[in-house]
Length: 423
Ligand code: SAJ
Image 1 (cartoon, rainbow, N blue to C red):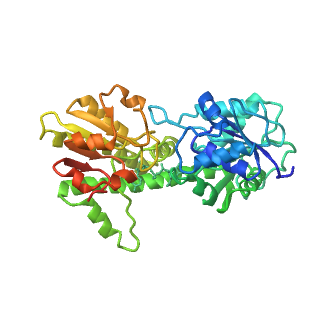
Image 2 (image 1 turned 60 degrees about the vertical axis):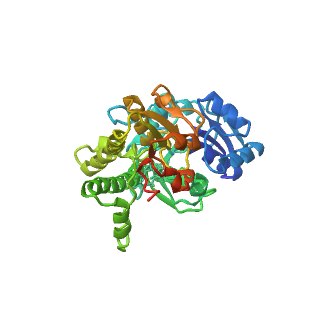
């Protein structure tokens, strides 16, 4: 099959799927985007976006305008299928593959022999093989390759087999469009033929290196990257607790230590949020609970950080009769609108529910409070209104607008700066 003018069906039009679909459309692919959210589908078909990511609006407008990107509620026949749906965890920290399974079973209906199915969602080890099983259950008429590590002697490819690969997304929210093109990509085939075919697709829009491997290794590599970052942030967060106890400025400590040529400590904060780093390490823990001791502890250290911030604010609030507490930022990190797993939301909700004062939340990227805060008692206001009234100012997210704040406006207020921007 020629690799020119291929049709791609991207399932899940969120932070990964929509930019990927749009970039591929601009590179000449005919792209069907699929999402279960009718509003997202309608918005995209009008050339507009339902999420915030720098420059994504112009890209989607151009892709839809070119006639090569359209959005749908159901999978459409295509040569290549890319699954980019959420993979949350359950209350027990066990991975929840409901969306991956539903997307796989729904695309199975339109598969034809020789199609390639690519999993981009971050998943526990062996999910790509589970997808092969789900497809086989839905479509016993199709043949699917068995897992074969790269370098092992592969069985002769079955003519017309459906190919499968895991190509984990690795982009940083806020820089998605650049990183989608520039980052190196790991391509883990269920067998070597699948890896080769998948690489031919990504070669058309990725200028980073394409690193071919098998799907199990690719799955664990992605989890490893995020667990590495989580462990390193936990180290910084633990240092912040040690410094609080010893009366030392953690930011100054880290600045000094980082002058060593082989030391690169990350930044402490109010905890770790987002749908990736706060989630993915648990997928390793659930697969190898006995062995993943450090990875589990790092998660626990980072998950405990909001509790520390809450008690710091409560202590300061005792100085006032019924203080106004301004919580600056709700997003999980700077300059994004994404509130998923955000420690800032958790902290704001606790402070509001404990009724130790009146809680004002400032989040320039949203226009109404998320469900988690809607009946907490917290009120969404703008920065000026919050600073005019606040007795206690709690900086939770280092959004550009907060970093640029004139420090004089904080005079006379009790300040908790969890990001170290106002030192
Ligand atoms: N954070 C700190 N201190 C730091 C760095 C981050 O407290 O020094 C916090 C942030 O405030 C945020 C959380 O960690 O709450 C995660 O933010 P992040 O910028 O480290 O990462 P994400 O979740 O936006 O994106 C990560 C990236 N993974 C790595 O850097 C290894 C990205 O490349 C992945 O594509 C993404 O996860 C993903 O989707 O898996």
